[in-house]
Length: 298
Image 1: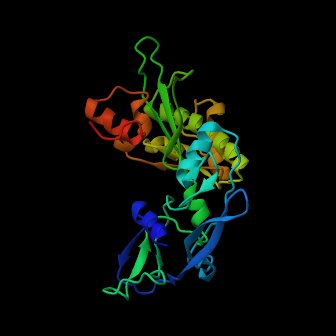
Image 2: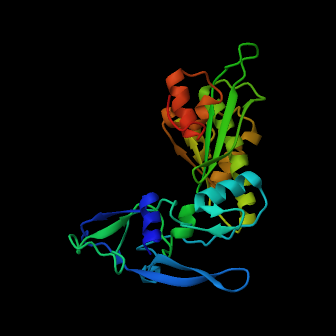
Image 3: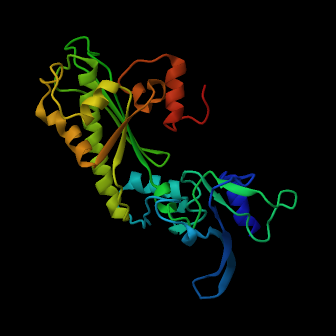
């Protein structure tokens, strides 16, 4: 039991706070089971602290649920999936599985037998997902695609370069930087084309995750250009964008169908910014740290 709580501390799952008003406090309980070895002999006892999620009401305490089950299919996505859920791949064994998924504001009671005597009326505010919650499985699997582009960055043919980075959970799973085929006459057009490439990648990732029995409602694309975002959500043709080829409206079609969502992100935090553009050393190292390629910012 103490080992389980140590995992909560290591993963920064919760924090003890005064009980808030007008908020549902979800109970917790211990679940015990015996682990058997290959001969069927009890090798260890396992204790798991779970939330009593059956007390949650749909539409009030949670909105969407899904329980994922993994299958070996794609190496990078498998590794990202395992890292997010803390799988041990050589045994496909789960330890502190859901303790890495971020969730919305949820409060749970202090676990039986481990109540803080100095603050018995306090409750734990969850910072990450916990077994038993209705929204826990989906909280662990989050895909984000960062899309960026320069404008007329090639000095020879004046074509723009797209940069795409994809994440499953907190793990970088794919990345590429590629010159665009068509000549973009504005930054908005270049960013729109880049977001279209990200849309293709997002749809592929959604399809790949189905092999793990994970079905995402939509893929999230993060873009730092408001014009490109507005153009992807608005079906009306404007004079400044009416020349854009129909094949690039693939993004807008999928946004309207609800397959993809696209949101604004600050240029300084867009991980894909370092792919198509030259940057200062400080900015480059900061974004490289965000990609997980550095342990510390130099």
